[in-house]
Length: 83
Image 1 (tube, helix red, strand yellow):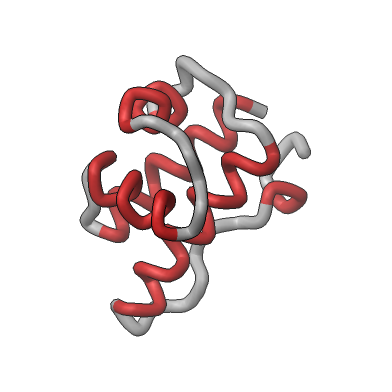
Image 2: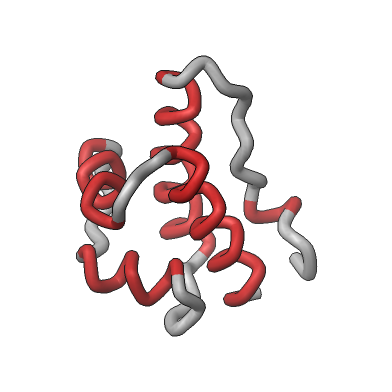
């Protein structure tokens, strides 16, 4: 699951035009408590996000997509390949 979740997060960051810092700030505003280091590890496949962590990160990225008038492009955890 780590690679699929990591690839989805990495792709979402790229499409959103965000850095790990931007994602951290948005995730923190939603109530998440990951560090920027954790986010870096998760987006590079070196650490697996939990179901809850992925949910916060995907929601934060999808809210950015809303701001950009894009559809929700982040897959739900259950829709990731291999879930």
